[in-house]
Length: 459
Ligand SMILES: *[C@@H]1O[C@H](CO)[C@@H](O)[C@H](O)[C@H]1NC(C)=O
Ligand SMILES: *[C@@H]1O[C@H](CO)[C@@H](O)[C@H](O)[C@H]1NC(C)=O
Ligand SMILES: *[C@@H]1O[C@H](CO)[C@@H](O)[C@H](O)[C@H]1NC(C)=O
Image (tube, rainbow, N blue to C red; front, side):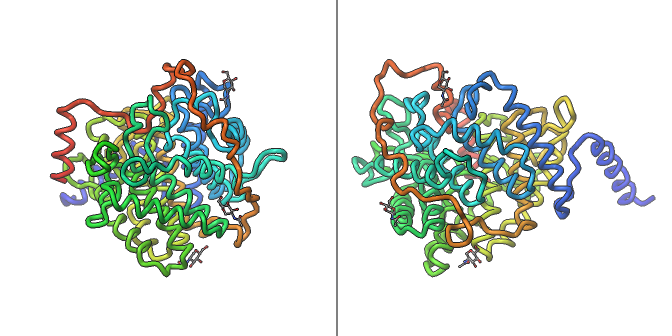
């Protein structure tokens, strides 16, 4: 036996032994993808049903925004697989948390950030685009997305930086003086999707306003297509917190994709944005400094190798994979830019799914050859995003718009009741719940920050 053959046999043997436990996945086979997706979705819902707050539909322990983002990923699972077993739980949670038709429910609104709310709005527009079943007597999915848009745009803040969405809504919250990429990118994406769905120009005008404003700050540096996570009001949005996160890139890319399609590809700025940001997103497929990384596996580079991702950050890859995959249905030239690496990432993700009590729970670090010992709802969500994203070309269907078969009814005035936008009394704030308020937790370990700075520059 030659050395090469011997190595292959040895490797094959190892893989086979692992295969007994790890999730089986052939990324070129629709049925294989569907069954892997079903497995990770089922384990994700098991976590969901086991939470302490299970009597409150859609509310997670210690965090609120993740409910919306989980439902968004689950709706995509249903759209791509036809498996409707989770639909009732999705409807229950979405309607329970709808607030005044704007996903700003009074139980939590005292400590929500703009980014928390906008994720539920993105879930609602996703439901509209998929013709996800609506319940009689409930507001339409489209109107719930419009309700979020209608409550957020009045918060556009011209008192510093000549515009922009603040991260937090209330002055007593840490992060009120911050303008961040996900709050602005999230509303940008929501406005762009509303524009394409309804063809109402108001939404397109807003989308373009948010994009252009972002480009006047470090949140969207068009010169090198870098997205800073944060900038501050005090500096008039000239300083920048440079942590690199997958979901910041994906939310701006996705919004640009909807605008590209909305303008029928006529406006160069959207194609330039998509191509530029896709290029810089390659940083999330690292080759250096990571065991087992080969430049083809999606990695949350700012926290994964140091095992410092918080629960929010553990979900970001779900949005990156999902939003980029759907982009290919409305921006055809991106198919070959996106899927090769989404496929290798899905394979990496599947290799991570060999933990927990059933030997199929997923870990965090998709580049690691074997299960990394972590598990949880968030890991399941990211893997579900990875598997379903690769199913998108099998379905090969763009999300609906009102022109192409979308049936969700428009209510341009949804969510403008206003009561929920008033500043609450300070003594209403439930501080024990505040842990879940912010998406991006401030990181204060100086040594670690230095290391990261070095890593990003060096990488
Ligand atoms: C608000 O809190 C009450 C009391 O815990 C709970 O019964 C209700 O379901 C909550 N509403 C939402 C929208 O979470
Ligand atoms: C917009 O999306 C549709 C799919 O709904 C696609 O057929 C069309 O080619 C896209 N437009 C452009 C300019 O790529
Ligand atoms: C378009 O959207 C704006 C903003 O919500 C609204 O005021 C207007 O009535 C809408 N127009 C139509 C035709 O729906």
